[in-house]
Amino acid sequence: MFPYKKYLRLDKFPHIWCTGCGCGIVMKAMLRAIDRAGIQKDDVAIVSGIGCSSRTPGYLDFNTLHTHHGRAIAFATGLKLAKPRLKVIVVTGDGDATAIGGNHFIHAARRNLDMTVLLYNNHIYGMTGGQVSPTTPFGKKASTAPYGSTEPDFDISNLAIAAGAAFVARSTCYHATQLDKLIEKALLKKGFALIEVLTQCPTYYGRPNRLGSAVDMLKYYKENSIPVETARKLSPEEIKGKITIGVLHDIERPEFCEEYQKLVDRVRIKNE
Image (cartoon, rainbow, N blue to C red; front, side):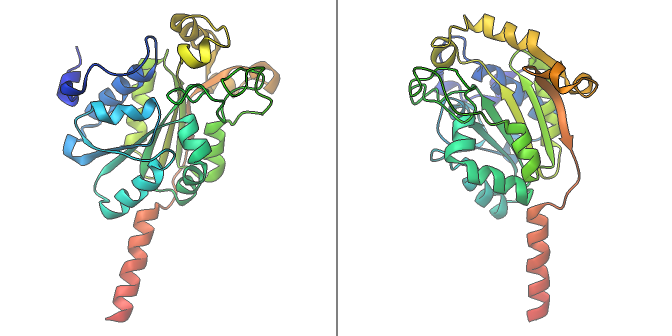
């Protein structure tokens, strides 16, 4: 059995997550990935904003920073520039990262800042009461959309690719063993790396939309996900409504901190 306890702050348990929530699955996948990547605890900094997902760092025995709603990537940017040796991981949710923190998200991707963003996408604001988020699907109910959302939803992974991210992958809580392998690849990638994880919220999203239990929601992920390699052989009509999982995007780009340091060195030499 994987030694999770060595990475946990046991005095912070029990956790606050609802029964059937997927946050624990994602947290455990991240720990397996960090361990397999061989990154030491003191070399990791995990930053979060506000929300169910953002409670994760509080349970983990790394350098951790719990910040303001939507500002996790902004804090992580400052941290990375001040301590570039650290492996910076941002743990965030769909509302935290792409609504309140939307500008930070797209500009960190554009700059190609060296950080791993682990984004729990449960299609809802969970902790704050089940409000509609940028990823709530059209027609689905939320506490602020009791008759169904009339807004189109974001495709977070494609948003990151369009903004300039170096590495983008997607998985679900059902595919837990695939998930830790994708996170490991993201951790070893130089530049902005996004892992979008579709995770069930049976309390605030599943219940009002009559999606059944947490097991039913996981079963949906199982039956409606297709590997990216398969999706590329299918027509847009054939993949409509399906969840494409795997590595969606992986390129090499100049990384922001390194480029910034080059600028500092040039200016320093010029002024000597």
